[in-house]
Image (tube, rainbow, N blue to C red):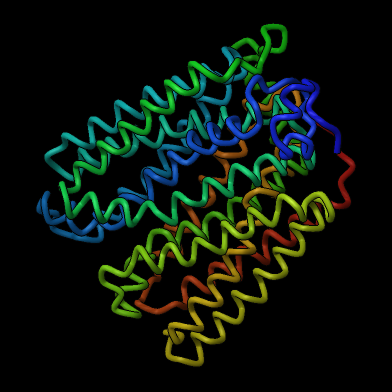
Length: 422
């Protein structure tokens, strides 16, 4: 790989010699990675820090059916589906910084609504608004990276970001549980509020805009329709998007049922954040390894290998569950899930990079459509399979096996496509 064009910046760290930007990023690479990691981690923080508080929220708001508190997770994702369709075009028309900052503003409004709510319905409404806002940083940040990097270099940068990002789901449940015990569930939303403010100030002061005026796409129905039609007709983009959606759907099912899984199976109690963090290590290790492997093996080969591994490990989990009345031994469950999540860590980075690789001039709306379509598929998968949760590991194992087989079939099918960039 080449070096960053600014010699002074290139001397700042060995990391800068490993990825060639399309244009100057403005920040030294370590700060750029730290900033983008902090901004994009807001989504994971908003989901995972709430998990230990679901029962407390239901009790405090006198919710008749405790299962309804799961809406605080699934409808947050649904809000992101809506927001991703909005902030992609906005970031193409007005710049990446505008898309991120506008999203953070909406997220802040949703946080205040949820924090001050006196009923579950209002908390859910706040969570939907939060989800809409969180999609701004998610989509526009991805487009910002695409402005600066491409191909394996882009995947490498995303791997570094994802390696730091994965610390959030490892630590967020423990943070949420600690805040819950010390100050109550509403204080968790104060943490979200502070994080949004820090992100806004840091980005606003330090990161230059990466989309010049001459490359911006006017926000008009005609342009949106034309670009959307080009993207949804692109076989590679849509195949990778659907693949991401199924993998994310199986993982979202895990997130939605994680606390119940550990409580129902293994009587985890207050140890839930620890078990959750241990499994997250698999994704973090994969992201770190991916930054090296992607250069040697390439995006496609690495993705195929990870999908093959996911099929094998999830099939082993399914067989183990069938042989043990639906509940595998704790060590077996943790080991196989750790291996599965290692594969998922490889896939989240590389499948998204493959989907974005064909989106040059329409990276904003492209990231928007990729994220929204994949998230919508994920919500549908998690919601439909989640209905069959029967206090066993069978639904989770079946969802991972099925998702991996579908995703692998789509990735293999794209190898025959000769479609160029949008």
